[in-house]
Image 1 (cartoon, helix red, strand yellow):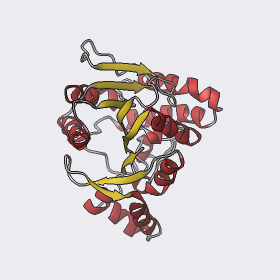
Image 2: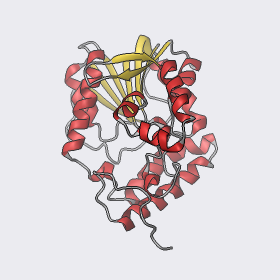
Image 3: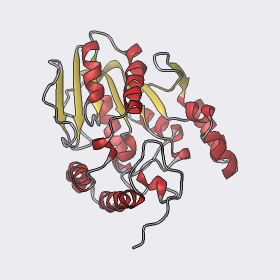
Image 4: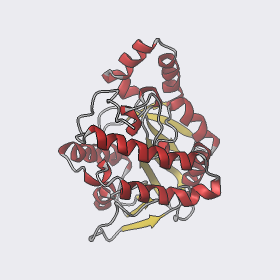
Length: 284
């Protein structure tokens, strides 16, 4: 099969040759098809194996190789975003922790840090903070006790779940939170997708973004499992303006039914990226 041309401009952080990008796309699509067609019982085994296989077969995957100035700034931005929710008594949970860089940055600010992931391939570190604990999970359930967490956080996680598992994972997050605890969830907007490697070769996510979301999807899902307040986080890092998620959902609906060219302009504008990012803060 001939390697196709890139359908969209190369992202600034992506330097791999087109051939390697296309090979990554084919491998990720193959693995994602297995997950999409698996039963629930099969998925609980496949989540971990899928990412171990991906990182073994795609040795130049950005999550393994990329450590750039942009990544450092992004990490600092995430810490600043979460800082208003943290204190020395906070019990913090990072879901889909990857290399655990964020958890390590948060550790000095809080009482406990729990990091969970389906793969240990990129979480191997020789040194760990004393108040840090890593848990290998099946992708849906967690190794943390009921009401044992004050702030849960995930970044680029929801889109990797099979849609049939998303509500169950949200219910488990709700279960682990203490009363008044919060879950901050960042996930790429489906209105500006796809955001996985399919970006270069397809119009919709075909890789390990099994479903991309918006506020219209997440607000009712979070309310369904018991979260009381569901807000969008708007504003610069360290200064969080909480906007009702339902209001952002209505803005999404307006953008969704706009002409294609207008929708693309809105989603590529600063206002579109800020309002429809998607960053959700849900309170138990």
